[in-house]
Image 1: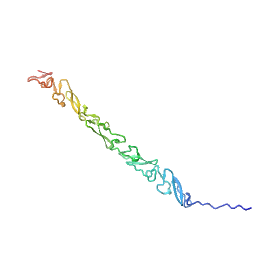
Image 2: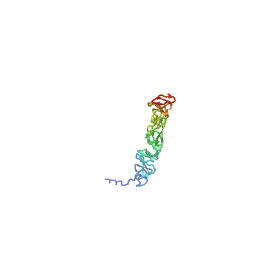
Image 3: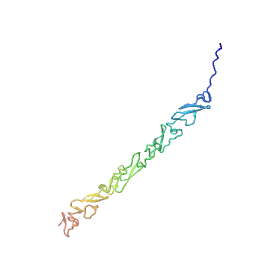
Image 4: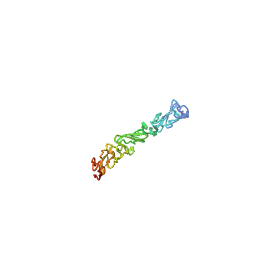
Length: 248
């Protein structure tokens, strides 16, 4: 009976050219941080997991960069977030606005163009996004983040509030006739504002606007004026006085 052959006691050695745990030398393990280590021709490599990158090109520290949050490698290595007029952040691998610089706003809510709106001067976004300046009866403006308005002819911003535009029709408003604060109050008369000028609507009893000048109202006292006794132009003769509208 033939004796059994001795067992093969030869130790199997790793392939130093391809083994990620013994790459190029025994015990020289390739770094697999955030990825899958590889070994080719005795040199380490790495295949990164989704969301990570070997952005410094150094295999020894694995896939060191989180592409989901790194502002300098956002979504891909060397894809730097640099948004206009803003502090940029990287969220889920996409550039986003962290905060707008003073005087700017991301009013269109589109991250790619950053904080595109100058809120110091934009009439539609004055001071803050979507704060549109009122242009009622005028031309709106925005300066230093505050609304203003230039009124059309015949209108005035008489309450000083840009928010409601040029609210006053200065062609017809008694309290602001022709200009803000120019109130119609004619003597002995009911006043009106017509085409921006004060006029007599009706004289008080016993008075008349005999000189046809609106600015002095109904200036003639028909009960006492010798030149207009009882009616405009009815003058009392020499030696007569006007009393209760009658020459005596």
